[in-house]
Amino acid sequence: MSIDRRSRLEKDVRDLERDEVFESLLPQAVSEHGSLAGRGVTYKALPPVSLRVDGRAVTMRANGSTLVLEAGDDPSGVTAEMPADALSDLIQDHQSTIGLAMTSRVKLTSGNINEWIGWEPAFRALLDGRRVHETGDVTFHDLNGDELDLDRTFKIDDDREEMAHFLREAGYLHLTGIFEADEMDTVGADIDEWIAKATPDDGESWWATDADGLDQAVRVLFFLEKSAALREIVEDERYQWLTELTGDGHRHNGGAEGLVKPLGIVQGLSDLPWHKDCGQGRHSYMCNGMTTGISVTGADRVSGALGVIPGSHRANTMATGRDPKLDLQPRMLETDKGDVTVHCSDTLHRAHPPVERPRKVVYSSFGLPPLPGDVVKPNPRYGREARAELTDVTDRIAAADNENDPKRYRASR
Image 1 (cartoon, one colour):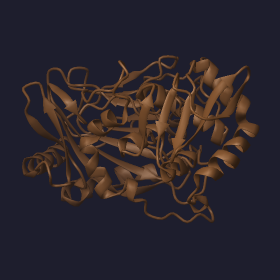
Image 2 (image 1 turned 135 degrees about the horizontal axis):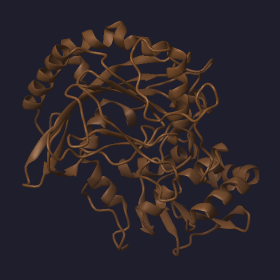
Image 3 (image 1 turned 120 degrees about the vertical axis):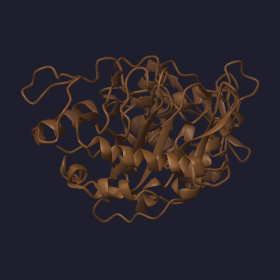
């Protein structure tokens, strides 16, 4: 039951020049997918968007039933200034609208960041032929064709075909009782040890600020390298069987991150808002991978359970934030110690802030193998150093936004 939705090859990525994009690639995309993209822009009521690169600009807007491309910019909508290499990455889905902001590669001079990232599904419709999600597009059925129970949980010895079908339909799984409490206590002690060792400039941790102004380490990067107890768990058959679940050849990526979720965080990447793991870009090269959350302490409604939006992996919708027009309703996955959650890399999910008790969790993932004939090279924008730099990403997003817009982004949760 494949969840592989890739549509591009890494080997085809090349450096695109501005004029080739403006004069050839975008006009061709409008010719092929202008109606599809225009429908999405109209449905989402998006303002015009202008791309300004090295002194030249083009504007896209809905006109009747299609998208049109015009020379020049339109300050009544969104104007995004960027270098040619950033435009190249945007056109080829190597970085998204928000991904460019997160890496300081775009600056908005009109409009605001919400309107800019709202255009992401429209870009994917225009450039990849993915219909922008509309109300009623996604429905849920079990193997018998009946309505799917979206609150269902599974045990490790349940029917694997039903699990794979549920994952394909809903975009997540809740697996109960996978690991023992003493195993989780040992992993939790390792998280505590490395959180205590972390320093703000170590390049191996993320930090956040609480309501009292105290900066706290909240995530240990490269945790699999640091915890022997976690390595035993990851290598265990109770975890590795996930590689065979969908038949797509998923394999563990060899990494993990240990998280604590303290109370009262007001700024920083602790309780992440709604997002997809492909939100920075590369959906068409990586989705769907599988991200797992190993519940070290368990999580309920007062300790910050994981939120998911069923079916959002089948919806071309905003990958950062929850589109106000999205009809799919969220669920909260309340876990016990030793449970495992799985979500597709294109599933919208979030960390609900704990309000009574903190929690601990380990996140790791299974990626897809290269497509036949493809050549995958390391990408520094998604490497170790770039991962560590995300601890300050809210400041970069704020700097990318239009400071003159009253709805501009501010660096807080």
